[in-house]
Image (cartoon, rainbow, N blue to C red; front, side, top):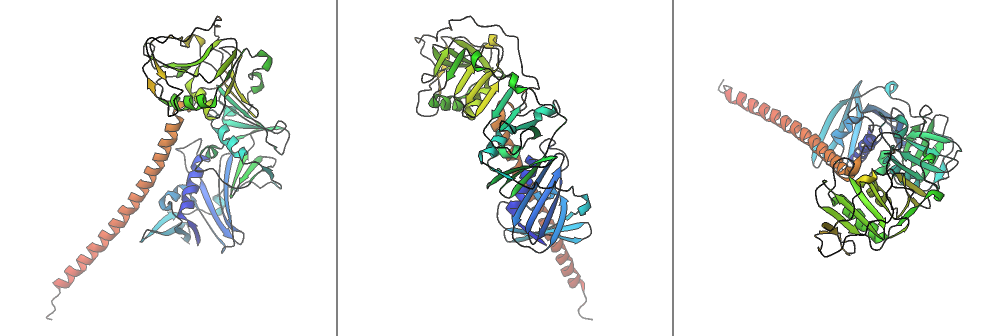
Length: 467
């Protein structure tokens, strides 16, 4: 018999969903192996080019049990209350736990150990890395594309010589540097979206190792084996990073303006599709957006921020601007309105493709203004008609060739927060459905027992006790 806390079953299912089920969320759940021995409890599952392993030290009685991981939903919970897993006969397992004061039992199918894919061999040595490496992998996972459209952009590039973590989906590119990777060459590995979720991200010492076929990441009790992709070819990202000598304009966002804009962006109405917004780097720094071509323009004057170089008006996707702000960037380098835009800090570069410069919104008198100077959260307010519009940039705007980084369009878009919230709600609803199923089963069992008692009483009443 193997005992685990119900909250661990819940965490295991969540981690498997965010790793092994990432590419095929509607596919079959992986098989999971629970193994206890004198070294402790080990749980692992492997599917595709990813493996997940959990280890809890401390001697235990030798025991193994394996089953389809979707079964975890039947007995998972949010408490430390234990659930006992046991194989009661060939091909049949049983989970026993208490739901409050109510004892619960559920049966499930088990599989033999021969059917469980082996976890890749661990490397002989793990190189310690800063905890920031986990955050870098999590941010990289949010910058990747769809594997069905281009396999390479669904990968993360780990550049050993430069100590880089690089990811792109074709229209955005994130380069993060400063990590002492224990190899020199560049390797492509699967993304780890589980690291993007703070409630699931592992805690503890971080180590990285490599074998011939896998990169292995260890973080606290968790180990992730990432198969090295040697067949795919990663885009030449160096070709799209603007050279310093080519930069003609620059923006320095004041931290308070950046925070105000990040808070306001999700609320600003924009057009469907690419969600274009305008940044005006001429004289004063301005932001504009409009839901429809004929609708009112929303405008903010970022009075604490500064622009240098040639005045320029940029049209970019709101999702990319919001992502740059959430990543903490405040410095933007511009070559031209139709070339890749580069957000930079000492250890990172975030590149995004602008939209057609012709779609940029010019200054207008009739606007809804975001009060960016307010100490509280930004609000939209009607303008005073007497206010003059922002001045036009003095230089002639360049034409566009609709240049794009190679690859597919964005897959997540500006609805990231809503998608995360909806996914969390789906998990809660799934848990509610599982508990409802168990409650119905218990009620039906009580009903059968009540009927049996009623039948027995009726039989007693029918007896002729006089005989």
